Image (cartoon, rainbow, N blue to C red; front, side):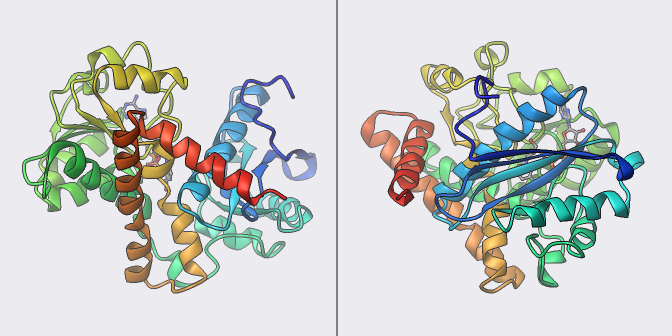
Length: 343
Ligand code: NAD
């Protein structure tokens, strides 16, 4: 465990199994220096436990960075349930997960993620109070992550390309799911021209119809001659195989862990491509959670998420002044905040 490449001094990693209800889960609490660890519960039919462990370690660390860059009073955590959500999810399994969260005594606040829903959190709440989405407004669907990506993207286009609005800006969006499709809608409303790719033909058809997007094959999305590339599907897609082909000036999207390795940040910079840190652009969810406890109306939540644009502006300005990448600046801000919060 301590030699695991994704282990980053995580405070706590809990392995849990309750065979009576078919639950096999891992909860990772990365860092609670700034507050209780907040993060989603992913239910996925992982190939093996190793893949689940890698995912939960990486994603929980990412949550620490999201909360810290946005100066929110939370740490980073994540949980994974190994299983097929369509086949294996039952109320008993969810209640068992709720008891595990309760057993951590508030160190971890569980939210929805791939394979889990707000309704699932409601079942868990019979066993624990440490869940997201406790208010009625919070249970209304609101595309907060996509809205945060939009604000980061708008700011990057303004700072790096001198754009005062998005009219005619060309954007290639990879992945048309919960983040990518609403992002396309926001961009189209503001006049951007969209090129899209997804492995799901129905989603591509929806984007063609709703936002007049031009569809390309999934492997062709990297080569599009656009202003901005917005990865909103998988992690690790910025790598030695893709970076040499990118023709965009800016990369700004919602996917987690877009860089295959930290060295790919420098590879993008060497090609003159500005990379907006993924954990900044896609931090809308944790801002939303925090806002729930203050004023959970849709207008107040979106106004709070819009701060991602201000933080992006600050990070890009510091990067330009220091001759460093935005990621290097953001990482340093996060590390300083964590160090300052430690006793
Ligand atoms: P999703 O499952 O709803 O959508 C992902 C989409 O990507 C799907 O339509 C899928 O078909 C498509 N896809 C898969 N492989 C592809 C490929 N090779 N090429 C093109 N498209 C492909 O997921 P989501 O909730 O939209 O999340 C997308 C990304 O954003 C993930 O990395 C996720 O971790 C991250 N993220 C999501 C949220 C959120 O609020 N949903 C928050 C933060 C980060």
